[in-house]
Image (cartoon, rainbow, N blue to C red):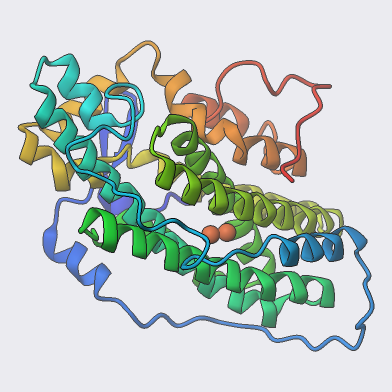
Length: 358
Ligand SMILES: [Fe+2]
Ligand SMILES: [Fe+2]
């Protein structure tokens, strides 16, 4: 039986169970939890040569792919608040709804600005978690190839924290605090007891989600500064997701049926909780400013016939194909993923070769 994360924050909308934080004091307490007790194994290795060639190759690619978030980005490009940097509809939730309601363009643009600053803020907080978690992995992973790669990923994640925080500070002027659902889930990954679960959680689940989100921004934006930043981060993130797959492939091969089921359940419960929020954290923060009731927005979104197709896009980009490829989605979880709009369509029919991210 799988445990449902955030069971105290659940409420039922039709046949869908959402995660909705409505207690401001509880949210503030979560954000104030700066010190996290983390169990951490440390393993020495005396094997300095490479044991997993693909991992060492990935490390070499990472070294060649380094860039400088201060010097290589043209920070002189303006990012004006009064110009669209995304399509008015289809890319972000708030401007899409407001446009459909016939709200004036200036208000729609302001909503896009707010929602985007919120999205980049959440990605930034996720980058900080990735930076911390990769530091843990350099200690906890048993192989020198993994330590090399995780160590090199730390500097990549530092650079992502740097570039996204500078973008928010210099171009948007706003930094939103972390969403409560995200804080809970990131803490769970950082607190996970084994390097295997940490690698699965951060490298496969969150890196996979990040690749999907960054790719959707890169495709939607028309702004050269934003496109350049996202493209650079995206290339690094694809490498990180590949590290997750290479490491996890070996882990799964060496695991018992019970351990594999534990990993399958861990992946499902994290992704289910993430999906169950349905942007309610963002809507609680920004909806009222635009006269939108968070619950109404989510209920009407969930009732749209095209909702499963739209909702599954980010999941189907990288996370689901990679989990399927690893054998971590089976008949035990697939139907539930489909029911919750995370898997959609027939892309996972047997015999279909799934792409690996590299
Ligand atoms: Fe990153
Ligand atoms: Fe990453």
